Length: 260
Image (cartoon, rainbow, N blue to C red):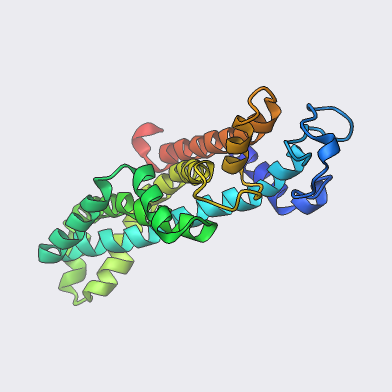
């Protein structure tokens, strides 16, 4: 079920230009704040007469790729740092882990807000800020797995036959980190989407006219009585986040024999 919901949103975002009945930025003040089902506007209109349904579809083109990009870059960076810290050990482990703990000492959204405010409010800087605050969790996870795996006999056997450290790390140790990392990335996509939307809600994401879901909710709060202005983009985020969590839980059960 979760996979189906995610697939529907991805398809809707890709084909938004064919599905949406209106342009996301097209204004018609004479039709402002129309409720759902009135006339040709399925989900109603916002304060400038823009079609909510069309804006939610186009908003998926911003929110979904942003969340996925944050997790992909953050997981790769965190995996590299964690693998080096766990496998090399010694002073490198101490340095890399102290840096990791420094970033983890701050609440995610607070640190992301500070970084985005310092860099400037736009989509690129919001993604950079989220990557900076997201990689430490992957570094901690991968380091712990590497510390456990490198003590196994097959790793010692690889050392005995003369395999290089790079070969052992990339071909023997890291493959054992893939399953837990995939589970974490799947669960984190929903969190990244929510955090990105949170930055947009606070005015630290895309430009104000952008049909981004968090930004639409922020604008809709000013017209709280017109519930459709904030409900539908909020439901879009909620369904996508819940679906991604379902997928993560399913993958956790698949990869962990103890939960089968």
